[in-house]
Length: 264
View 1 (cartoon, rainbow, N blue to C red):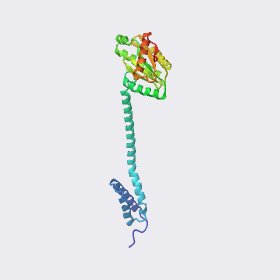
View 2 (cartoon, one colour):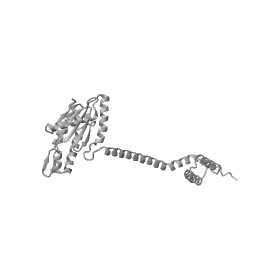
View 3 (cartoon, rainbow, N blue to C red):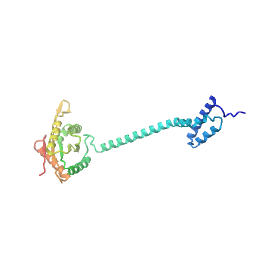
View 4 (cartoon, rainbow, N blue to C red):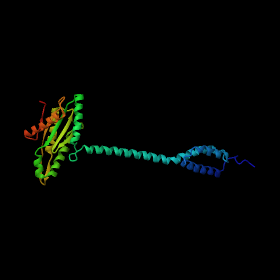
């Protein structure tokens, strides 16, 4: 009897090897039985397909690659999804932080954030010996305006002033709703005389705004602004108080003007 292992395998034999090898690959992959691959190859080599068995490891490797290609894609999709979730979470945290320090009506920062930021700017001014100025802004005759037209109309005035202030500032400056109709602006690296220029832009810009509290009625509102420049070793409260005093001086001198309060 001839040894049936001699000669080339037929097409049928090759198909049997391919199909069985692929089936075994899938089964062993699902069972994580990778250590049996070598044994599986040896079994085939001892049977009828001695010559063809040489190519079996390569086929099995290809089978593994095809089998796990989809899983790799799923893993990449999961990594991408997690990155997107993390990015969305960071953005959400940033929005929450901004909301917690922002006044809803004027879209300026709130009073709590003002004190934190002013402390940082004072420390920076002392460290680098840079000038630092404040502006304290108050809407003229705002109580009378509210009493005449109502608080909802008064809110539009506050919102309008917030818009004008934002448009007049540099990126390094920051503005805050100080309380009621009062606003305060921090001007880093700004001397008192330069702070006056910024204040004048705000004053003129707000005066140019036309509001209509009633149909066919146009109103121009005005502000009084006090300015002060930080002096070395000055207390934070004293610095703010000088700006506040300067604002009242602007009121006493006729309103709709800017007044610089220097250290006495």
